[in-house]
Amino acid sequence: MDEKKKTIFSGIQPSGDLTLGSYLGAIKNWVALSDEYNCFYCIVDEHAITVRQVPADLRRRTLAQLAQYVACGLDPEKNVLFIQSHVAAHAQLGWVLDCYTMFGELSRMTQFKDKSAKNADNINAGLFTYPALMAADILLYQADLVPVGSDQKQHVEICRDIAMRFNNIYGDVFTIPEPFIPSTGARIMSLTSPENKMSKSDKDPGGCIYIMQQPDEIMRSFKRAVTDCDTERCVRFDPAEKPGVSNLMQIYSCATGRTMDEIEAEFEGKGYGVFKPAVGEAVIEMLRPVREEAERIMKDKAYLESIYRAGAEKAEAVAMRTMRKVYKKIGFVAR
Image (cartoon, rainbow, N blue to C red; front, side):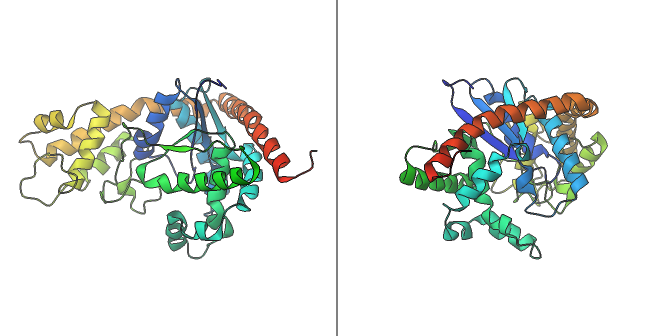
């Protein structure tokens, strides 16, 4: 780690395949941060089991996600890429922080309420206390910044509260992290419900585009994408009045680098029947090299294993420095 650089931590659950939203809203920005910061990017498989997973699918998605991280441009030499469960300190610090997290704080978490409603037959303790594990993920690496979407700031806020409470008792143990919302981050919405964020947990498969999806499936989804029920049927950026078209324009802008004004000019008088397939084609070409590289990496099991082993070793070295300090502060006997 370069002591002169600030540290960033972020992670994505392998609870579903990575989406276009994950790529444009998170991973693409992570790549841009690699030179400026010490970056720890994790596959948070321990968080994933708050909802029941098929074990074989979880293993497959975890490795596929790592391959996609690299294929998206995250260089394992510049970034620490690792699997959460490979570093035992996450669970160890998670339990310690459970004891410094208040019941009322956990009760107010939006994600607990949302997931409880969706998984009424499995409202388990892990689902309730996951913010303490999430705080451990961040605090283990003394992260200065946590890249999040504007809708996820609550996660960083409770982490800050837990860290400040611990520091107030034991002194300067944890760096207090700040949410980092990149100015270039795109919030990609569902193609079928543009009022909702594109999510791998979306029950309507047509609303999501996946990084590893085949071109014909991608094109089919874009051709069926919701536009707007207006009479003008023009391509105009207006998120309040035309959320469907505006979402497609945002995606097209990310894929081509064109501004909203340029997109409006390009499709003036052409209507949605021309615009939607053009967005689909641009996304297909943007994702093609990522998909092909991820497929190549997945076939090279030795290379993939070398990445997650080296990542775990680097992550563990940093995490255990924090754990030793925490254990000493709270009064545990050194082994």
